[in-house]
Image (cartoon, rainbow, N blue to C red; front, side, top):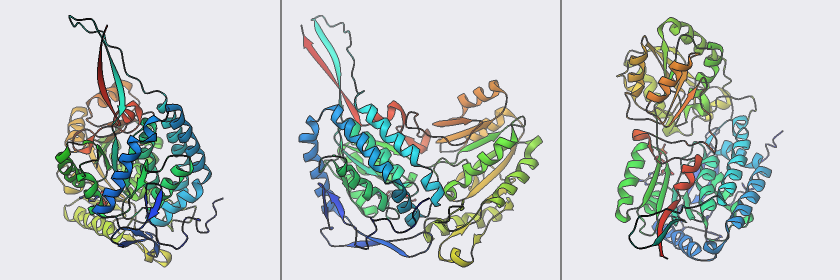
Length: 491
Ligand code: ADP
């Protein structure tokens, strides 16, 4: 049972930046507040890092990169990561609670990430001793031995969103530690607590000062990091628009960039699918984390013979979900992160009706008692959605699903692909040939067959098209923090 008393990290004091192993205020002395998504109460105040603070953090990261960290053996970095996995696991109840208190993810769902976070850190630990180049026979007229060295890219600027704060921090900092890079991480302004605490745990695990720096702040903080001439790489997760701006800013010093951006993922249900399996998975593929998930399967294509049945069963499932306070262990649907996010989602609820979609369930804010203090939106389904409607084309980032009928395999694949995004997709059928054909033809970075949403540190995840580039998970994740040196030796 989780102890719902306040985690020790929430001591009522303003939270400072973590730079070079020390807690420091912003040079300007500026701060910003973070309010609980569920209760509207002040959770904590954070130092607002400006350009000068980002510069200080980048200098610390550079010094650490050039210093003792670069001489640490892979096995030492591995041992640190394994210690970190233990520390995080031991404190996981508190870390989950920090996310729940700040961005509103229901506590049971937040606690459910425990194994994934532990396994991720163990995975990165394993990777630390498995970084290797190649020997390459060459045809030079002079006798030359050639081989590659894999070297850490250097100082990484990591910028993360608020929808999975701890998980995002782990997937950004883990590969940094595995490869011998250093990092300045900027959490989202709505969810800075768990990344900050994770930064402290890195120090406790033996990460030397300066290797992991956490600068809380706003868009300007991220922008300063993206434009900083001494940052070698930006690893970003967030909206497509912000990602585009970061790419532009990073051009000045030709930074390597990896981008994990938005999506409008198709989930295709063929008439022969096992609907008992489809319904809960497709519904939670839309409603998990109140729809604040980049890979949410928000375009549910259903083959005509089962179309009305799926609509009815999806609606019944949606209406059975427990909407409630984030700290109630029974709650499945928590609040949206902020009023700003609610306004955005509410505008799409109105738009769906205005565009002529059939509102099947939800479509409204849920209030009453404790729910008046935050922004809960009832799980919402629109049916008879046209491919050209904005609700079918734009990422809503709320608990809103579009259901669209289809009659033909080629047609549904073309429609599934008719989006600027390409993050993920799902296919439901008992016909393996049909499933494989869909897997090959859907242009997206992850495809689940007879399942929706699975992630693992060993499996790559990331975007085709405007959902980004680079992969997190898999060997590609580690590769993205390395660069390759070709070496020639005359013999
Ligand atoms: P959202 O609008 O859903 O909060 P964003 O993509 O804007 O999503 O935010 C993701 C992260 O990017 C956050 O940490 C945010 O502070 C940061 N960010 C916002 N604007 C900028 C910017 N211009 N440059 C760099 N980072 C930014």
